[in-house]
Image 1 (cartoon, one colour):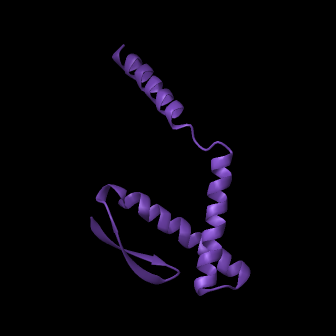
Image 2 (image 1 turned 90 degrees about the vertical axis):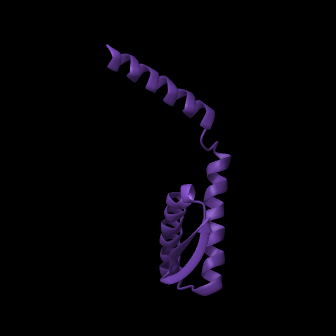
Length: 93
């Protein structure tokens, strides 16, 4: 595990993550910070209330996505493998 300093709404936090998860965590930090800033601007909320409201909104987005079927990972993997095989065949010619 490595220590990573992140910023949300200008406040710094230190979190632990595996090196292979660092990029994903940084993307999540950017997404969350944007959501918090947007909601703060719209509602004039701050602190714990803003954090709870943002968590509720992000969770709602996630559940809507999940209920809509989300990504079919096995199908996506098969399609990627098929495309890779076709590319390999074309490059071999």
